Length: 346
Ligand code: 13P
Ligand code: SF4
Image (cartoon, rainbow, N blue to C red; front, side):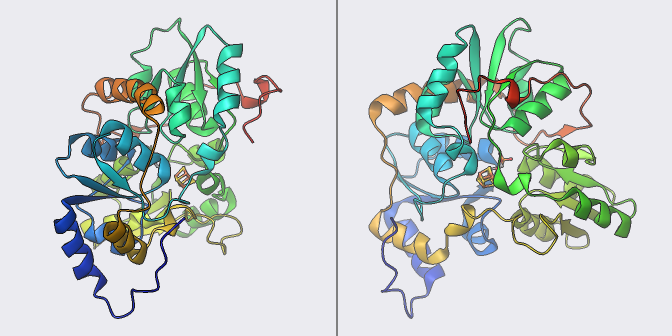
């Protein structure tokens, strides 16, 4: 899917990327989970909501999106007249994979009295089937605006949905998808780290399962975890999200120590997102040079997906960067096992 890289030998990639960026009238947007060298040359680094807003607002003709496909698709849907390129079109997401549109449609049809509140980590086709899109930084604020008697399907992340349900007391039907990165964090390794660094707070992303969240002092989006890292008086922080965000923490607070919580037995790289890692400087250069790979979606899907995304932008108000501090209150979540067994997201 990605153009060949055979012509890159001897190029000053950073200079070439800057040259092409100006020639193309392009903006480079990057997520916090990108490699440090990509974060450092991006015009803007942010969480999913910040990046959506930037994509909707920019005057640039080309958006070079250093993130994963659903983020680049969101940029295209919000700015359909722009060319949106993604360095590697294989940069997907396990949450997107867990939620095929035909199964999501069937699930919605089986629950006609529910609205679909859908995490932005899904395909454009699933967005087109949804009522309101949320990000981790805006989900609770948006949920709070939905009448209490309105039944809700939340997908595709069972852990974000479960966290919201426990925190707000809202019962929601959860789609059984997970992020393979946050799912892999090891409670045993986290407890070992807590013992080694007594008093160090834990910041966790709500895509983590409950056995990680229950040890967290702060739960929120990547942007809010970064803000917490800078605001906490502690000099050491245990970080339960994809560890490339630590690059921004170390730049902004060089005197503090940030430790990524490991996955598995502590020796694997499974706390790193394999999809985000597909983007490289070389592929970004080629994408800017060739304006490929580019996001191409049907007008029909884009028009249908834009409405729930625009609802998100309106309902999220000024929630950029406002994270959730505190622990879940109650536990009355409808677990994915209770969902119609004919519908499987796995
Ligand atoms: P946020 O940056 O919105 O917190 O999302 C995290 C994530 O997993 C993106 O794929
Ligand atoms: Fe998807 Fe998880 Fe990677 Fe984010 S970190 S892109 S949710 S697989």
